[in-house]
Every structure is written in C-alpha cells, then in structure tokens.
Image (cartoon, rainbow, N blue to C red; front, side, top):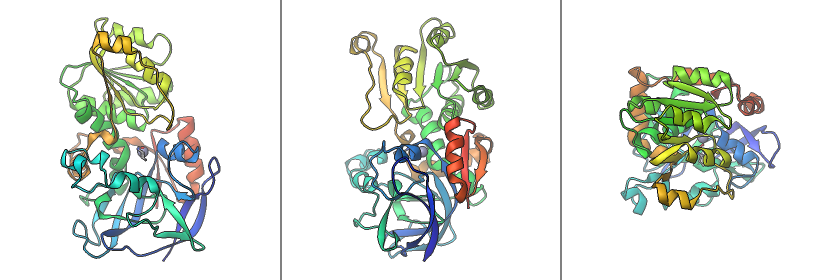
Length: 366
Ligand code: CXF
Ligand code: ZN
C-alpha cells in the first residue's frame, strides 16, 4: 500500500513528506494506523546525526494508533485494538528480559538500532529503495509495521494522543521517579528541565509523596506549568541554583536530583545539587559520544549514587495500561501536557517550536 511519511534523507535537513510503499506485516508483525505521534527531542538527535540510526529514515518513536492487520502468529493484539507503541520492543526471554530489564533486551537492541525489522529487511521503501525506521517504529507516517512485541494494547476510552505520550515522555519521566529512583514520601527532589520529560518526573515524584519538589528551568512559562504538575518550588537556572537547592534542603542538597534535558553541564551541576548519599538520576539523553565530568574523588567520599534511567525502567506491557488507568482516574495530568497539535506536513514547524521551548509537548495528529 501507499502512505505518506516524513522522511529524513540527510542529516541537518528538513523532514520531507513523501508517498512511500508499505508492505503488509509478516509473521509476528502488526500494521497500525497511526493516530498521534509525539514530538520528542530524541528525533532531533537523529536529525543532527547524534544518534546511531542509518538514513534515509522515518523518525518518530512516541505513538499510538489502531491495529489494522496482523501477521501470522500474532497473539497479543487483533484488528481494532487501540495500541501504544513501545520504542523498546523486547523478546521477553533473554538475560535482561528475564531480569525485568526489557529496555536492555539483548535480542532487540541491535535490531532497533539497525532501523530494520528483525529479519534484516524493511517494510517501507521509496522507489524500491529501503527506508529505515527509528527504533523499530517510525511514527511520523500514516501507518507503521512493527513487531508485536512493540505493540501494547490499551483501553479504548482514552484519547489516542494521550496514549501516544505514554510511549515516551510519560514512561521515561514518571518511570524514572517511581521505578528507577524509587522516590519515597517526604524525600526532597530537584528536577533539572521542566519540558515533556521533566514535567513527568515532577508528576511521578508528586505521586510518590516527595516534598519539596524543586523544578529548575530557564523558561518562565515552563516553570508555571511545573507548579501545576506538582512542583513546590521553581528556580531559574543560573549559577546560584545549587545554593538555592541547598537552602531548601537543610543545606544538604536534595535526596534525589534528576537531569531531564540531556546536557553534560547540567548533569555536572545536578551532581552538585545532590546531597551526600543521595541519588542523581540521569534521564535526558546526551549526544552519543559525549562525556560528562563527574568527580570520582567526591563520589567516593560522599557515597553519592549516579544512576542512568532509560525508558523509566518500565515494563511496557505492564505499565502503559497502568499509566492510562492513572490518567483515567485523574491521578496523572496528561491532557495538560499537549500544548500544540500539528498535521504531519507541519512537522518541521513542530520541531522548530520544540527547539524554542515554547511547548511542553507538541503532537502530530493524523
Ligand atoms: C529515545 C531513546 C533512544 C531511541 C529513541 C528514543 N528515548 C526517548 O526519547
Ligand atoms: Zn522520546
């Protein structure tokens, strides 16, 4: 079949809307008609050539839609099901999957990076040339063909654009607070960055009963939104921020500090804002190949813990439905995350808005 898709053909060039060919799902694969795709900074890393995905590629890794057809042997979903897509398809059986670390799945990690299906081929092509898909999905297209392991059936009574957000920002942010960092009632939390992921960390920390919850950003609009999502304090990010966080935490620094932006310099500052024995959780993705200077001499002497958090340590099959239950029961504010909607052919504008920081989350609706 034919479909419209946003293609990235060269690094640092605009997305181009093209009509491409899509093959039907093979065994174990699912065809999903996309309803909504989130605009996330990780797609921009691909545009800038700071990721590992090959070109030409369809980006987009935060999406939801309706199952249109399934290949042989598919058992998890059937046509008509609503689905949130997972950008970490996982086999369920390898060393990491057996230890509840599907985000590290040994079978799928190289497949997802290849931009192809598990059989080494692509279902998408343009004039006969194969087109890659980002991390097993490629949501900036009218349809996707994905492994069934990436397709999580969700309740039908939630908007599909909310279901889409669960596929990246919500899992990454809420999961980082409730699972990776395991924030406890009364613990102090500081969050660097109050964008799509940072706001979700704030919500997760609030659900855990943290206090205070200090949001740090440079954008005053985002700081206002942060309060609505549960921040008790907001700080403008400058060279007094660490001292201000200490002043709010009995001069110690916060029990938990999260970096959600993916900037080395912020990771280094966030380390300073962490109390001795506290935990710094690194959530934002820094460019591949970049490094962060964290002082070993201080880490040893203060027993600070530095943790990576990838996809919020979630189990997609368990947690996507749970997040949507929490949303439906008023415990997660997800409608408020979407600040602007775009058509697929407005995708370049959507990324410009994301870069200027004017939106919490932009979303492409089909
Ligand atoms: C990313 C992680 C690397 C692959 C694409 C998605 N996560 C969140 O944006
Ligand atoms: Zn993302």
